[in-house]
Length: 195
Image (tube, rainbow, N blue to C red; front, top):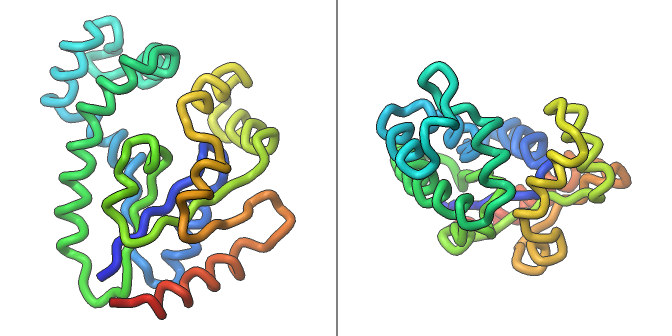
């Protein structure tokens, strides 16, 4: 079974595209959602507090906004956080993928697939992209963030061009092309690549 990575910068629409693949019967592992769940684990909380201190806690839980403000302004601390979170997410993915049966491929959806180096573990990569201005506006509306908060996150992601250059497939989500036909073309291609 093929393992396919699906990525895109914040606000690109990668989750929407992954939902389209799910309608084709393709299982999708949402790495970013799993990472948020992992932040609730007592063991992970303990490790994060050991690095960042108790100031990132609210009611004994990780305050994601406080933590985000710290790590998105310090690449070194972001790496330390990722060193805690990414192995746990990878472990969950490995268990999840073992339980997938009778599918031609599965998808691992993650925002920082390239930045983390995890793109190397996949048979093919799909990158969803959109204009920066559109992405900023989408995230501001979706997550009730300021422009500065969105830019804080964006500066820690590779530019679209860099991701596209390393991708096997791309999906244009600028609004000029329909998403479903683009996803269908990729789906057909992946079925033909089936091992």
